[in-house]
Image (cartoon, rainbow, N blue to C red):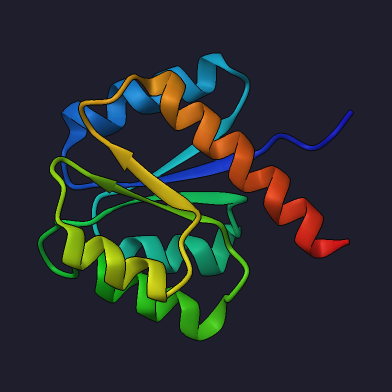
Length: 128
């Protein structure tokens, strides 16, 4: 049996992380939650999750800054940007730092799941 996939959800809104966390757990994933970019970076260094769902708009440190800092020490970690609304400029900037996709908060969690599966598949292929 493969080891359990660890998903890190980074978002300052518990009304998003709680149901999404529950949903991923119901699909057999292990879930970590960070409410801001600084905590996310600590968790990534300590726990090395398999994939990160990173909110674009957060207090303390926004998603782009968090992404840049993570990329400084981990170029390979699949990161999916989470956003409540389309901000093409920031999403484009995020792609420049190597993200695996974008999940919109209004979307069905199943869409987040397919993004996760695709990112992990691509990631495993890169590692071969």
